[in-house]
Length: 427
Image (cartoon, rainbow, N blue to C red; front, side, top):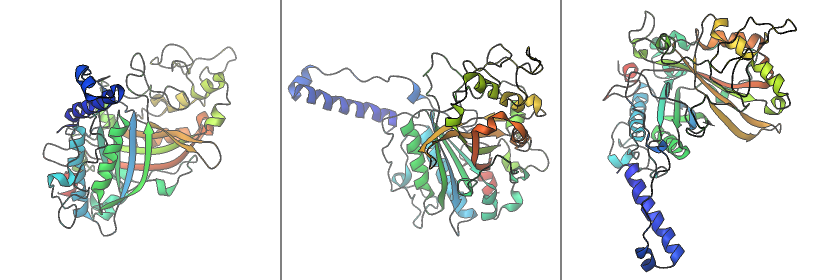
């Protein structure tokens, strides 16, 4: 039974209980049966296909809720166990993205999950999201550099997975960085996202263990009168300069070609590379600045995201315009100036972040900021040159702290009847 059908059953049962409690008897309920429940919005009914040329969760619009999780293969687990794990994970992701309950052991799936061949999830769906639709759920899988050593596939590791260079603004926690495997979960419903998280964690069984987990959020679709670029926790519109799928060079910048060039492994065809950074925002310091000073740091108006040189959010900034004082209207160290592709040899990446808030840190300040996720066909041509430039003189650097980092190869989408990573693990 689909979660959507179960919604009707659960909704009717809930309405029955409330009516009986209100009037004190079944006879009165029978005489005044409530109208059938109707969905308040269409958010829950939206679904994203699992199969395709690219994995979901890359060009999918920003989700309201997300989980980023890295796993390490268990001691003694190798290529065989990794293949069985990706097979399980792909089956679960495909099922949940369609809005169906996680099958697990209840379906008798036999894919090497345990010594008796049964899935390690206890044999039934947890019931967390039984009364919800797919809510645009996506699940995306990637491989870290160490995955290839653990599975005996070092010869097939892409050169683009070479470690990122060190940056002066880094304060990285090794325990919350990198990992053998990476999973990105996104949904427009928090319970649907958590349901997927639990199902995938249970599917891991004895094959892999969680290395780190980060939880994030964005504005809920439909919360504004019309679609808008999201804001981050500093209140700034964030993502204005993102490449768009309609751009003629979008695929070249974001995805590995269907026929990769020499030196790029064929199993990465249609794939991309994800750079993941946990960036803490020093909000107490930021909020002490005047609005004018905040806008000088960013180089854009806070109200609508337009450049300080005028226009709208999508207007190109006039980087040569000088003010009455003879100084650039957009300061030389403004974030918008330094990060623009024109200032970085055309380097571009697709930013698809989540905000996070993990309470109050030991220093008494908010442990909050941005789970930065960016996508590119080659991180050495996307993330690295831009971050190097920012590292040398971005005014925003005084108000942020890079606390964790990871780089992952995300293979192309699975074809029908295929699991993610099969072309790597079974060739």
